[in-house]
Image (cartoon, rainbow, N blue to C red; front, side, top):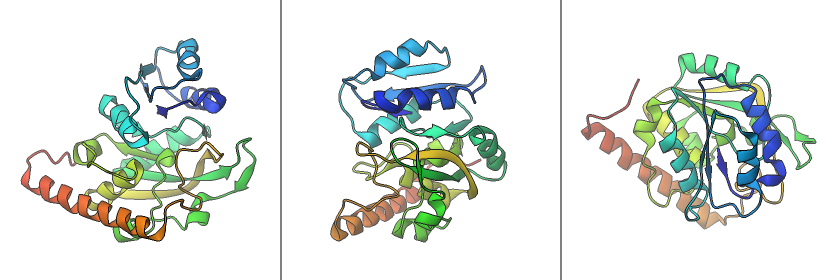
Length: 238
């Protein structure tokens, strides 16, 4: 989980996640220099499964998620935002799906800030689905709905410099080097509000030229990484 001034919605998310974790699981929380009550709220929860990584300087969403991923120790890794709510089936369903995939993406219900559903299916709204070229052109890898095998990190880390978004990168690397599954069952209430860190699922605030630059950057970075993996003995493939 990456946090930054997430106090208004964080408690509901923490509760929805922790109830699904076993005693040997961990919730890694990388905080990006919050100035509200986020850190105090996490510390007051007092759960030994939480590993809190306070920030020393503001990194931004992508680098802060990278910090959390570098610290993760589990075989299965779930990306988690600070303001959503996991549905009770999330962990079990996605771990089952990972039996035949390196990365899985579930559907979710899009909501407003008060969790009133505004779209019952993100997949239908975004026309989500697998495919490398398809997702370079129109990304449908939504990080808060993704889980993957630890072996993917050896191929995806470190993130290329200037990466526009971390979840797109992880999805593209998985598509190019392994197996990806899209699961039609919703496992999340995807809260969209004025302070949301990512525009995914809504109208992009980037202009057409910037969007084309981002796609070209992803494609170039992916080509470079695939070449690197071919020439390196550390492929991390399962």
